[in-house]
Length: 111
Ligand SMILES: [Zn+2]
Ligand SMILES: [Zn+2]
Ligand SMILES: [Zn+2]
Image (spheres, rainbow, N blue to C red):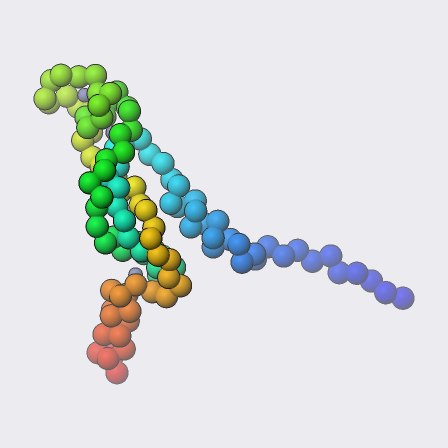
C-alpha cells in the first residue's frame, strides 16, 4: 500500500526576482535620462544618487526630444517627456532610508 501526492509548487522564490527584472526592463518609447542609484528590495524602491547626464535617444520620429524627430514646428503635438533609465549600483535587501524613517515615525507617534 502506498500513494504519491502530486502536489504543485507555484510559490517559487524566483518569482520576486522575475518581477523585479520585468519592472526594470519595461520599455516605452521615450527618451530616457540615465540615472544611477540603489535598489531596495525591502520596499521595492529605487533611490537615485545622481544623473549621469547621458540621454538615451528613443529614435522615435514622433518624439519631440529625439534626434529622429521629423517636425520643425515648435508647437507640434509630439510628447517631450523623458523617462528614467535606471542603472543599479547597489542592491539592498532592506527598505530604503525614507521608508525606514516613515516606519520609525509611525511606531513612535502611534505608541
Ligand atoms: Zn524620445
Ligand atoms: Zn513633432
Ligand atoms: Zn522605500
